[in-house]
Amino acid sequence: MVEILRPDLCVLGAGAGGIAAACAAAATGASVVLVEKRRLEDGRPNPGLLSNVVIEAARATALGRRRSRASAGPNPLDSASSKSTVDIAALRRRAQKLADRLALDTPIRLAALNIKTIEGTARFTGRKSCAAGGVTIEPKWFVVAAGGVSEPATEIKGFELIRPLELESFLDLEHWPRRLLLLGGSAHGMALAQAFCRLGSQVQLIESGTFLPGEDRELVSPILTRLQREGVGLHENATVVRIKPLNSGMRIDFAKMGCDLDFEATHMMLTTPLSPRVEGLGLDEAGVDYDRNGIKVRGDLRTSNPSIYAIGDVLGGLSSLGNARAQGRRVVAQIFEARRTIRPQVARFAFTDPEFAAVGMSETEARNSHRNIRVLRARFHENAAAQLAGDANGHVKIITDARDRLLGVGIVGPQARELIGAYGLALSQRLRISDLRDFVPPTPSLAEAGSLAALALPGQLGKALWRRMFPVTRRFN
Ligand SMILES: Cc1cc2nc3c(=O)[nH]c(=O)nc-3n(C[C@H](O)[C@H](O)[C@H](O)COP(=O)(O)OP(=O)(O)OC[C@H]3O[C@@H](n4cnc5c(N)ncnc54)[C@H](O)[C@@H]3O)c2cc1C
Image (cartoon, rainbow, N blue to C red; front, side, top):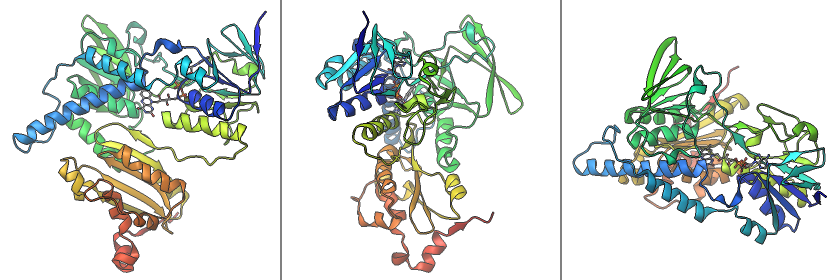
């Protein structure tokens, strides 16, 4: 006889979003079943952790080079030509150590939180039931958190003849890739391209659209310039036409702005954004609307079936751990605490060097939605902490409406991912730029860069001068 479980909540997928939803629900006293198709105990580092380990190792290598060059005279890091020997086994060990330390999904920990885990592939069998691991689950509510999947580039001729490096296992290599082609200029594609290059690979990064689409070009350009200076071949609006296997790797033919180009690579890796995993879940049986861009949800993350919510990468759009976790906590607050939650401000980022981070609107979005906006900028060049650290590239860009209410902030430069936090809070609290004046950061500190713009207020500079420095830009259409 098939066992039937009837918990309050069943979560499909124990990734970032699923675990956050399950833990938040269990904390309210709800009974929770969490289904995961991976072996929860395998403890293997996930692709995000693997790539961050490589990115941090490359950052340390670059910093070491920069410091040794600085001691020999002013010679900034400009090329990754000085080859490094990469100890892949050490990187692997480091990733495993971190995975062990950061493991949130061990069945023992989940059981201690009163979450029942089932290992198996979940599939809806009806509008209110799903089957997994030989068990039928009929909860009051479902949360689908099945994540994304890397799609093979089947449209490329010859793709089926090669084996691309996989994000899950690229540290299983014996030798570091000599010549690498990364296909897909997503934020993590750009960060990985720079990291591989800094660790000695020759790298070409091909993107069919533009890098970091939707973000202000003035914040993206310093990153592209740095990547190119360090030796990464960048190709926007380029299409891979054909891949031909060779004895020593492969030849990749691609077209860019009407020109035919090719590159001989020893390895290739897909860094295109993951596609939402909508196949194999039985969404039709459950009456959940979806297409290849993801599961369709309303503003409150409810699907077309009122007892099923969906969160994270399975929705398509912004792919981030923070986003998936925030959505997981949001649906639980709605279901179990009958709390209408505010949509949180989620940071967008690229862990390149210089780093990029942004919250709220880009300048283009602000111009499209507001008649008048104001744009404030502060350069790290004028920031003592950045100069002391020898890393003063980039700037903070703050966008406000005509009444000085914050609309968006973008940062390109040192520690952008840390600095963006204060602005995210300010945005979520609907603060004005003048409110930022009420906090005086330590001196010297990178935080002063943003304060510099915020401090330039009418009361302090004189209205006329301030208006001249930071004019309101009007939309004339
Ligand atoms: C290379 C790489 C680097 C990244 N780096 C970062 C980073 O540095 N910072 C950051 O914020 N984000 C990063 N991301 C993005 C981040 O990993 C995702 O946005 C996040 O994991 C999405 O969470 P999720 O819960 O939606 O899906 P996931 O975390 O992918 O979890 C989905 C889970 O569902 C399971 N599942 C799927 N189908 C079923 C089924 N039918 N039954 C049972 N279980 C199922 C899967 O096995 C998986 O465990 C990176 C992504 C990649 C690919």
